[in-house]
Length: 148
Image 1 (cartoon, rainbow, N blue to C red):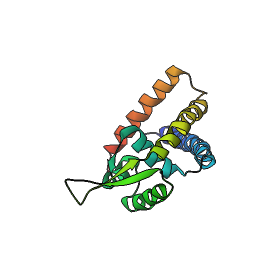
Image 2: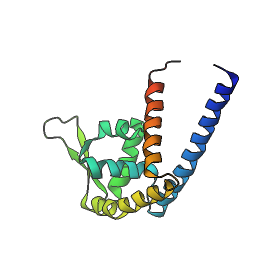
Image 3: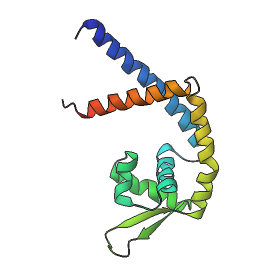
Image 4: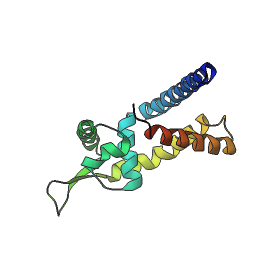
């Protein structure tokens, strides 16, 4: 590998990091304006789209440490956005299920969230978005195969 190739990799890292930071900040502002934090939104979005989920599996599905899930679920339950449901077949398993109030909340804000993301990605046309998706998937898959 040449010095130029190394510099180009560093530049790519910086550009990706800055783009991610801006998108994250805008998304966080949207969540905050709607009274939730990004983790709470992620849990609600999972339950809204995928239905009832075992508490033990939510963390891995939204990339959050399992210890934090209990805290987030507690907060959402207190606000009336979700319910805990015991598994009738296995007392060790408890599910999180979106409540009617949580469903109504997500039905209201999720379409707005989609529009915000669409606006944030507006600098790219459909073809460029497809290329970016393919390239970032390729990058992510290749990194999983590396071990340091």
